Image (cartoon, rainbow, N blue to C red):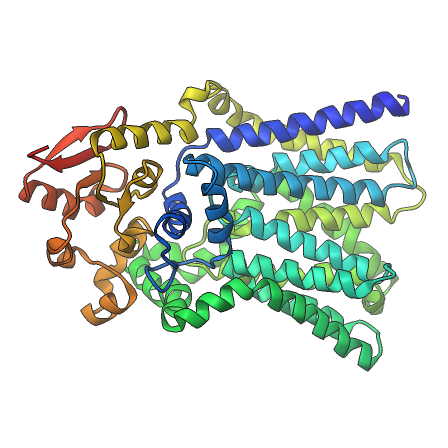
Length: 505
């Protein structure tokens, strides 16, 4: 195939993949985790409230500022948040495409197809498909970490290594400031600088530049920490470890058992044919030259040495949260893929088996993804997409409630309706379901409300409405009891959920 038609085919395929990525993000069912990522930026934008200082927030804060800027342009909060994360996932695909094309530039008649194959492998991967595009904090963090890795690879080859090193530090800082489990990733980059054969003075300067870039991008985190240090530490560390662990021990002890957590990633990676191929390819193409040529060569192989250094720290960040979920292990996928690209590109001369293996992996990934296609095709009508159906429910709430504050464990709906919520419920069900594990003094200090506190908490500022029906019945039950005992009348929403309004309305 000639160069022009070849390029047109690859570009058209890339655009189709990116379009499907966006459509899938719009079609995903609403996940209750998404409420706690959308409520804080809405509270910041419309009420000037800050996480940690004014309400509990169990995640690093960078994404709050990004989403707040987006929400200033549209009332469609879920759509804006998912569109941004789909954009981050698209940038990740394009970064890997560009990296693969550059690595295989010695074979210009094939390198664009190699890049396209890499994009297909990532976009079809089950971890990517499950995670990408939701209003979570994974897409930006993974994009920033991959960008940091690629920036580090440019340090040795660039005439301005300090710039790439600063960008690497900034990427690591952005990843950690978006998702706290990425904080350990500072260590492998610092270790890479310390272990690689460079002079002592240059090593100190490099560490300073790397740390300076990270510190600069962590400024939002530092500012919020300085405003409310006790709450910051409690929300991000005490809650996510001790408090959440107590809750899980009382409800699902099997999920947090040591051996179950240890085996969790293997249960997902090893039952996925595409992931088995990805791991096998990494070991064979990336690591095999080390044991064939002698392990001592790792100090001079900065690319794969850094990649191998990163993997255990990625595991630490993925394994630490309690309990384990699939999306926590998603960061492994792009880095395993990068290892395959680096290893395959080093084979000289270019072998036809490279293309055969690549497209075999693509076919296996496609066959693995096919079972999920019928459910996706059933939602092709935009009117059924959650990003629009959520806003319809919000408009229905706005029509029934001209103004006032809504008590709910699903804060996205009243916030999209332009109505107020109680800041203590910004995390959705998460602070609410664990509040009883804290003593009253700590609840008051850190902005938690327990079911036993509800009557007293609402006495001075009763809700204009109560929204139920979007969480487990056991979590909604205290809200329902309050509504019925105070004369609220239920109004069904167009689909799911009940809006309780005072009887006089």
